[in-house]
Amino acid sequence: MSIPARLVLATGNAGKLREMREILAPWQADVRSLAEFTPGSADETGLTFVENALLKARFAARVSGLPAIADDSGLEVDALGGKPGVHSARFAALDSGHAGNSNDADNNAKLLRLLVNVPLERRTARFRCVLALTP
Image (cartoon, rainbow, N blue to C red):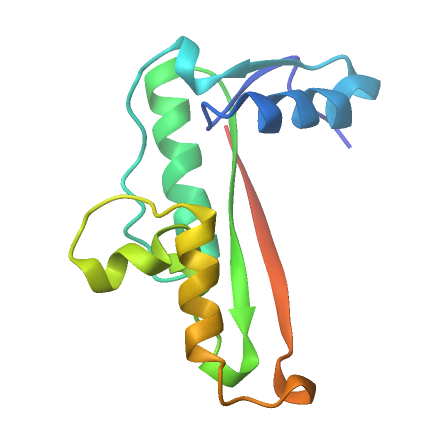
């Protein structure tokens, strides 16, 4: 596998940057944070994790001039038809009319409210993560 010598990670999250640097260390990739190039971020308007990851990677590549890697991820709960899915980070805020992300406690509280009448054996879910790499 060929990894670009220098690339930008489409995040301002220091923990995610540290993890990606560790993952790509065997290839001696110089992984930079999007925050080094802009305080902005891509609008996550995609309907799928793939679409959102590509939106973020393309935005990071455009503003940095470097190849970019981005992720999109979320929780898919079977009893809720796959929700919150691409809306995981802003799950609680969707009902409040507020823009932006919700905190974990509010998202978890909403999830538990929605599952209150669902038996434990039917509370199955998965965490899905998609990575995109753009030139």
